[in-house]
Image (cartoon, rainbow, N blue to C red; front, top):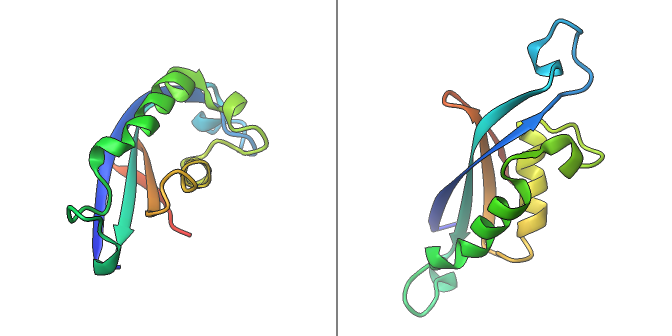
Amino acid sequence: MAFRISKEFHFSASHRLEGLAPEHPCGRLHGHNYIVELELAARDEGLDAVGFVRDYGDLGDFRKWLDAEVDHRHLNELMEGLNPTAEHMARWLYERWSPNYPELSGVRVSETPKTWAEYRP
């Protein structure tokens, strides 16, 4: 790809991870202030008439959905059938939003200021 853009979004949510040792802190109910980064990509010929991969304003639907459906929710209930790790969340978000944003090339999820998980198909 020749061009990549990204936009960052924030939300807070709780989760509890399954399959961990009993003493592992992530096995207990806890929460994070998450950061999600959507990355979109296009080749030269894929830019729109203005020269955008996509107008950042077009990502408002994602922001509205995140605020209404994910913010201050329990991820174990939202991501049914998935252990709500950052890795699974990145893929879950990609799969939900790639039909809306065909240029979506990757999703990154951060649970802490020093950690990131990324999904790229």
